Length: 342
Image (tube, rainbow, N blue to C red; front, top):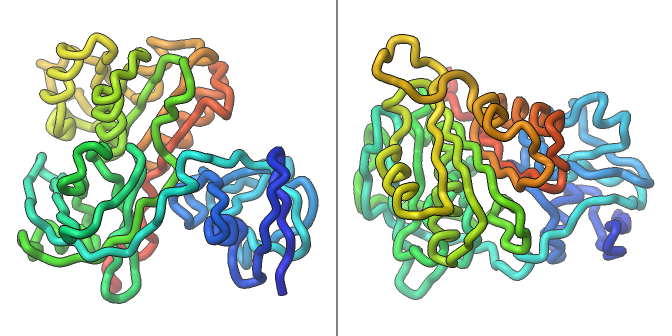
């Protein structure tokens, strides 16, 4: 059985089967709705349910609060249509014509960036090229059917290899392999590009970026893309980490800030109590951003990192005047099966 979904404000219509989510149906039929994790954890696909009824199964998705649901909002990556629907959600033209591919790739380089982050460089077959936007991600397809998502840290113009920043998750299945048994020349399968986190070039507003941990990876791609394209909008990156050694590309960013007048860079440490030589920002990274920019109404904000940082930023930035349509984020939600079974 299928139902008709009408998208507002565009008026586009699509058909959704009873065994697929609204987002999956939209992507299958070429409609580029916003999304990120696809498992209900990040909230990127949230929109308004204007008419009709949807079902989420036995549990409400994590990123959909009771308040959100009472206000008529829905998470379309987890929403299954129970009737014809009318929804309100922006369509993103930039990703509509990009083809999602499943491809083999070879690990050609592995480099430790710090104590728990590995840079992986993947090489596609010579006859293949992955078209993507700076900030999108790929999935590593594991042999047992599971997936691991990683942002592309390289911009589209630097695509000889695909650069991933892999943080070692304690007891993690795939990341454990990366840090113990994986060697250069290993073969993997990937699917991508995925996601709607990318640099919007049709805006003239200055840009604020906020990274947490390896959430720096997609922002690195955006920065390199902005430099290559000659984008002259001011960009200020705030990068939050626990300790100084967690800022694995700190020297590179300082060099970029010295080289490019458009870029400002502020590292922020949350656990700098035992570092008497640290004279930079301390505390939570979103607080540091707001100390510098208490009124966000005139900015575009891009943030990428762990879910607690994303949630804190969403609430704090809204309270400081940031319109929803000027906030873009990528929540690094770990897969629920990331921990090895007992």
